[in-house]
Image (cartoon, rainbow, N blue to C red; front, side, top):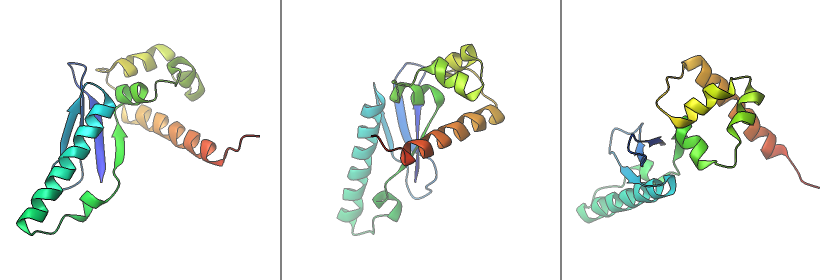
Amino acid sequence: MIVAIEKQNDGTYIAYNMDCNKFTAIGSGDTIEDAKTDYFNSIEEMKEVYKETGDDVPAEMLEAPIFKFDLSSFFEYYSFINVSAFAKMIGINSSLMRQYKKGGTYISGAQLEKIQSFVNRMGADFQSLRLA
């Protein structure tokens, strides 16, 4: 199940499942962690309702979610990433990347794919990395 994490206009965060027609769970909070915790609480409460009514808990509720961040939330959650250095490594103007981080700036599909591709490569690099 894919769970979107997005920064709202008021600075709070929302987490919600995107790809399940059987139920919708929502979590919100002042931080990403708060929104994720509230989301998981919503899932647990729904599981209890299913059990109380004798219905089968949907399989999606039992799976670990895949989180999908908007760029503002991504940089907030992974705050140790230097936005300017990140932009330089990808080949995107650092001022534009800071605007993406701030939120509210349109990002094209091609630009988003360029960033996603770099994040995937970075993840693969980290996974194969061994410290000496």
